[in-house]
Length: 216
Ligand code: ADP
Ligand code: ADP
Image (cartoon, rainbow, N blue to C red; front, side):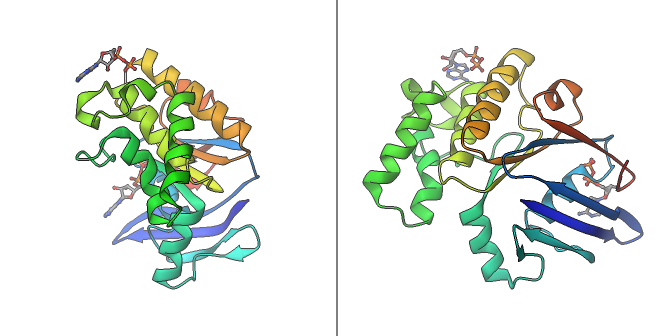
């Protein structure tokens, strides 16, 4: 579903990605592991269209996406990608429900449909009872389950997850990963999961290892 060839990213003298290629099939859950500084976040940012590679090509299905102009890249990101970051990327002023509805609102999905789709995901993730609270008024595990719901609600093609449970204790982390990977598999959504924890990577179908900007 998403493929990249010979990606190179430089930050000054630092070669963050040194000619990396990767292919992730539709519906596959792939973990990318590697030590700190190995280029995991850079790879995720490049594939997600947040950062342009200095060299290389990226395709989503048949479409080449790394050369799209900025506006088209932003629209593609909104429509086709979902994101789960470590923590704190829910909008703090909005309730969990409003956070989950947000991608649909941005995509101009009618309000009633947005409500219904958010409601069923909130229920599947067992956070419907706290859906009207803001992120600061729920536990870390509940907030991350809301972030998972938000990443899935617009039925994206690929979800990028960067240390999605890095801020949680292991019990809540497991609950989040169980429901995240189960819901993604049921919908055949591709997931690229970046982590430095083997326990987190064990939820993936396949694990890739990055070292010094190269998959080994
Ligand atoms: P990881 O996610 O595996 O910890 P990163 O992708 O964050 O690794 O970083 C890879 C390398 O690129 C590191 O050497 C890091 O210091 C460097 N790097 C990442 N982002 C930047 C940046 N914005 N400016 C300068 N160097 C960066
Ligand atoms: P989880 O394992 O999902 O992270 P916790 O065991 O941390 O959940 O929290 C248990 C209960 O305590 C939840 O119902 C949650 O709403 C409540 N709770 C936890 N932290 C907070 C907080 N900072 N503010 C309000 N309620 C909280």
